[in-house]
Length: 283
Image (cartoon, rainbow, N blue to C red; front, side, top):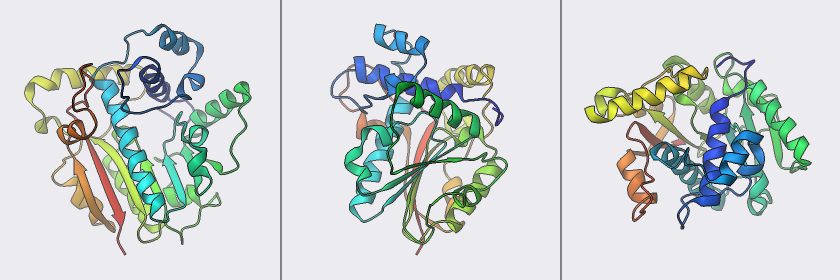
């Protein structure tokens, strides 16, 4: 996906959150009452009808990582963090549905220009007044660093921050991922935290799961957003630590399932090719 095209996967993810909120089995894995407003007319009608387009393991990836990120964010805020940076924000709705946290933190949505412009147009159409604590930062992670992008904002590198980077790494090259994390380390105060999900190489999957993953990747490529990285869950965390971070946890799909999906009867589960990592900037 080039910087001139808005992200279609961002809208798919928002539609999954909307569908889950409207029709998902209770208790919900993740609650997003605003997502239905952000998607376009076609997706909105499908969500309201209750079409079964997203209630599968793919939805589990989206819902699980959102829940994981915001649980850890709340813990970070309790510890005194007052900056939340959403890298590759897409149609994230945090700033519109969590006024309780906006009283104590400032939110920076960092995303490629076309997707961000589309989101801002959508919010204007809805007549949504943007919270004073929200700041948009347009950026292309393949062309510039996180530090360069945040340098155009009011972000303060001398204060701890919490970074979420969800659903993005698979679309970047390995080199771009490490370059971005190195820049993030340089632009963040010690004690800052970052969480992200990443796609693992097929060699770490059960062979019977590979065709499903390949089919999903082919679909994403057909809509113009090809995957570019498949990482090693045994060595990639060490590469990140070498950039100035300490590993807090590197969750497998099974571990995430046990944390957020136990006891569900709707079949909603994470997909087997995604890991979920949490790091802290070394002091």
